Length: 631
Ligand code: DCP
Ligand code: CA
Ligand code: CA
Image (cartoon, rainbow, N blue to C red; front, side, top):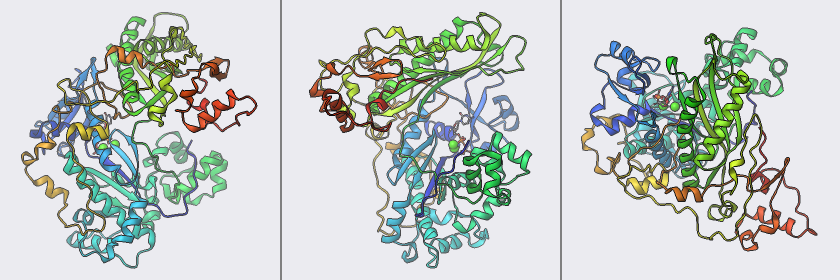
């Protein structure tokens, strides 16, 4: 259930950017002959030409939709180009798209706090950048406004096409605007510049919403697509929400939205205004009630998270119709493939970003014999994640068996699995990088004892090896290669793929009005500079598929030995019931000095019993690095 967060007192400028028909644009960059053509990307499948997952705007004009199958799309648009998603391990391989998304994130994150919200979306907090711009080169005293900004759609502004750009220019430069709208105007100019920069450096167009909070920015970013941006002045919020169907809100798409419609007769967000906060709390509880009350008024305190990496890694596969899996052997075979890919991706995330995933979760869908119309919920199961492909495969299979037992008892047949996925989550940033305690924890010598049965916890054998070298275990490297290594990391992508930092035009300089996206697109694509033709060259984008999460991590083709050396028992601590602790005697004092300060203090508290370590809230103690698993 959604929870309201206090709206910050200070005005903010938040942008939401979403790439247009994203997979199609990636394929068009790989094959420029597809540009401007009706094109769709099709998920690997031999049934009726596969399922469409991305459709170009040219194809949309013919009525082609994402829900269609390839054959149907050809029927409504005979000239359509259908491009298959790359396949690896007999399943879709999304790495080229993840890497392409990372290129964009690398550009956008230069202007403010950046949250990667999905494979093709980010939120930006541009408050500071907008304030700076307003101080140093306020639009009202600028002679020239960046041309792309004058193409913005401003909610509530007259849509008179004859002098639209003039109206927008006037709005951006209003001297009598309130401070919030002046900041939004600066935000609109910054976003227009960023979008042009993205286009110049990646060839991708995107659309954006600019507002004073995340909720409003997201709501309008898709309002004018492709390659356009929409601004929500404070004065237009009420009218905008008044007619917005509740189901359009992310959090109201499900049961809550249905209940609002069915139980309260609320059809639009504006309809909520007739209910007091107390009344909404009576219906939906204190938190959700307050959240609804604030949402109706366009109030949302949700912050942009500072995160350009995915929150989790997931690998999944569906098995529709006759492809459903009906025995343990076929489930194991597929789980092994999914786990192999997951293992590579979390290993790569560890190597490249020093991030450690702590929880492994198995999700599946299943149906029972003769009851295939009655989809019963197949329970999801989790356990602490142990690094190493074999261990992940072993644990995932045990999770599956445990879930199957809950679903179907001890019988071996009569069930069928229609989808399987494994997810690595609770990823924590080992931000201390080379100073992390993780480097001093070696693989467990007896890690095969994991028994992730129903809600049970594998036994995680701790091992602190003070003889481990102080040099980093994982050296990062990324070089042009014929091995198609994925160089999706935003920084590395720049090195590997030759993306130059051209820099957003200096904030104090007057930017010439040459930035129209349409103008850019109308130029011959073949005239693109060589440095942009990066696919498959310095950075062959290849790898594995996942059904969720966006990965910017690189595959570095580590040797089996390197992977094994980096196996990490994510606990690394003794488990006694729910009490987890280090074997203090085994900690080399020289190593302690390398650890983050708060951990040092905690360890010193143990080694000097007279000075007890103070109890710290979770999140600041060593136990938050290695928490006991609860499932
Ligand atoms: N995607 C997918 N399966 C879905 C939805 C999306 O594989 N059911 C992939 C393909 C899309 C990409 O994610 O290109 C981004 O999804 P969006 O919903 O943002 O849609 P597009 O970017 O394709 O189009 P739009 O221009 O409407 O944003
Ligand atoms: Ca998109
Ligand atoms: Ca999207």
